[in-house]
View 1: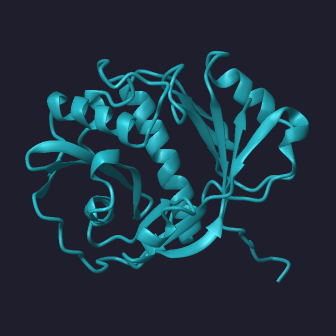
View 2 (view 1 turned 30 degrees about the horizontal axis):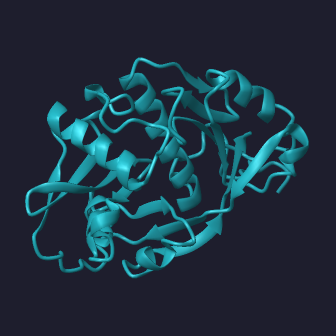
Length: 261
């Protein structure tokens, strides 16, 4: 036993899909890196976390994810402070338990559920009048960001401005963004990054005026089967957890989000 190389599943050489939790972490890290590079922004990847700053506005524009277990969390507050401009809200997402980082001046945002869905879950009926198209050009990309800002919402961003988070270079490759149109008008968004053997589902938003019609459910399903041969993962909210469970998503663990004050 002493001669065996025992792994904890989080080493640099361990498979990215060693577990579904690791796949969720590494697929999100992959999305952060790809999105930053598409926008011409630097990426931090130092073996402890992967992070980027896309803008000085937007709740999720400057963020990072811890990519391996650690006993030393003293680096977090200085690393967040250095991540982007002082006025930006900066987030740290950790799949691992953390100490009380309020002692370092951070604010606890919550413990969102991490959820997993097996490949090819049940496909719900689409609401009448809803069509879902994959974003493929600059016009669709501008509409996608506008609906995301209004529907999520991201109140400190201007939906009328030119796209600032989603640049044309973000499309293609393993990125899938979807725009929901109700009777021809954009009303909802969803997206997935296919990486580490999973569809990492994000960017689910519906305009307030059309909520309660099953549109968010349909948008989530579209993103969840971006690659129908892969399971899907997402980071939910307690409010939205029931919607995802109706699509056969299962809660696996709770992660932790810290933010600068």
